[in-house]
Length: 157
Image (cartoon, rainbow, N blue to C red; front, side, top):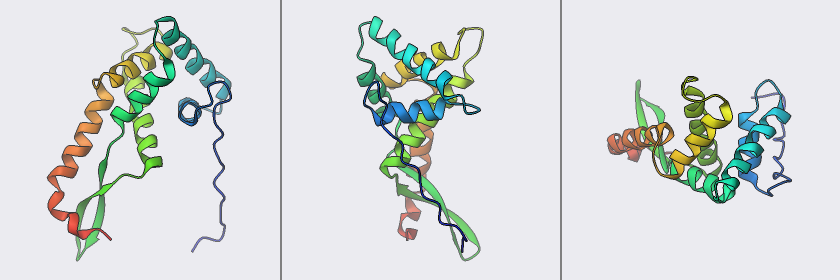
């Protein structure tokens, strides 16, 4: 049993766009505590979307909803054997997985094709909003694994 009870710090909505998802995206983009740099990247990317004639909030929300998985597998141990049991994904975990997969896919893009991380991230968000890209491949793999292990769904507890 843990000795300390840690309180989870609430994430405030983004003051510029009044969006919880944008605040989370900024926090997940941040590296080494450089939040101002992460804000600059996200805000410039959103300005680029606006200049292209797209609504940046709708585009990011659509990308998140397309990438967010509905089921995932969790390992359960039963009688010395480990089974992958498909379970539904909670709302906050869906957001975490979607943003993490989008950011990982953006970081994995080559530097030859894109000059900056902003360009990589914006291209991945556009791809995800069109149900394409590496983040969508990750979602498809997770849901395919859950479908393959549907026989063990009775082991939920």
